[in-house]
Length: 562
Image (cartoon, rainbow, N blue to C red; front, top):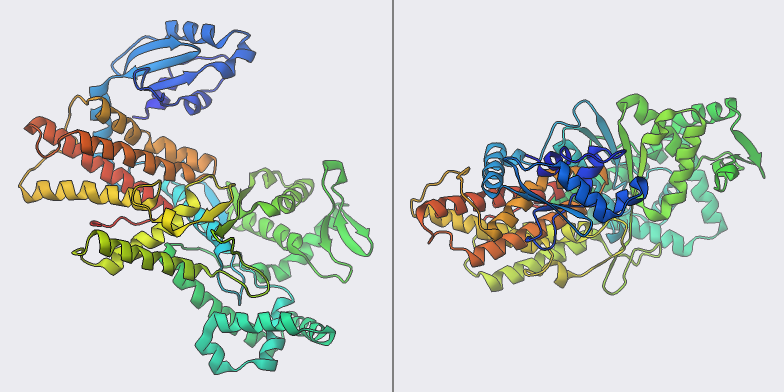
């Protein structure tokens, strides 16, 4: 049962939908006040009454039943206490029944959500700045699929522009095929950096000519480009595999080369295209924005041109319910312009385009990627985190089997969780020590909690103790708090999807792990009397299942032992 939805159905506030009431229901910081509370302050202006009076009047309209044991009004809050035995029976039975699907739903059935994320640049290695878009998009991909949507992961490759002419020019000057094959993407990037360091006007002109040859279909130029692309994809696939990231489409900027002219023609036909200093623009001054540049004075297309073509193509191809763009907040204006132009073109589905903006990532020393070749490669960050995890595991549990595999799961999880735990819009300073803290708000803490729960269940099995995963019982205060958190998981997943915030799931994992550890230390499990032991083992199993599901949505694995 979704307790928030159940309670919301019992509350009638004029002009307020049940969905909004359910979203306002929260767990009070003091459990003595109740299991759920509705703050009535938001209704005061519309109802022209004080929150205290609103709460008191609502309390009189709600009768207790087999689910809601008590209703009270306190200082503008409407508080609810639920039947603890019923809560336990309902939550444990549902988790036991649904297992790995607990928290999922079919609410998105028949709806497609396109998610544009990661969007790597051909011939450039992954740097730390790509972390957020990659893991944030990957988490949203899994969350929407979990809720029954058809998620389409799109890697909008950066495979268009004069930088590829620069690469060809650099390769022809200084490159060696065997050395580049051996060095892979890093050798290609070194050539690009060298070109930028040494380029003069003649070299820049040569680069523009090579890019023109790519566009015109020249075989040699395109063969070199495709080679650079194959080296890039072979490299990034290894990183995607480590991060548990997948895509359904690698249609990048170049894919839309033949799809831009019809868009430009349509803009002209609809009277939206204007000339400005030789360039072609869509004037957005009336909407408080600078003009959206469609074609440069030399006729070259821009990001906006390609994004317009991509949006139209995606709607025709996937008929999406929503199309998400997981791109850094520096591009806020760009997407506002693109979405507004599509709206002006008469596409009512422009309202279904969403820019999922996120903050920047840096290391504690402030290091970030630059065009000068001073970069922090994401693969190095992941590998270093895995190496540090291996050292910590060796110190904590020298007898642990499969240390390398466990270190991989723990280290990669720490990198992913570090990018997902806080609100997506916040800038992140990644710290190896903080990310690998067994006692902090980290994936390592949650993974260790899962290993602890698994150990309890393993000991029970070794001792021949059988139990019903849906065992009933009347929980004490600590058990009830844990059960409420477990019961809140489906609503948390839905809210993460609605607000495009995987951090809700990450924080739920940490909060639930804390509640389980308090229960673990304060309540006997294997040493309890038979009926209580069965109930507590069922609660332990349910916690392990729900936490595994939560971490799984973030792309983080759970080792059996740590």
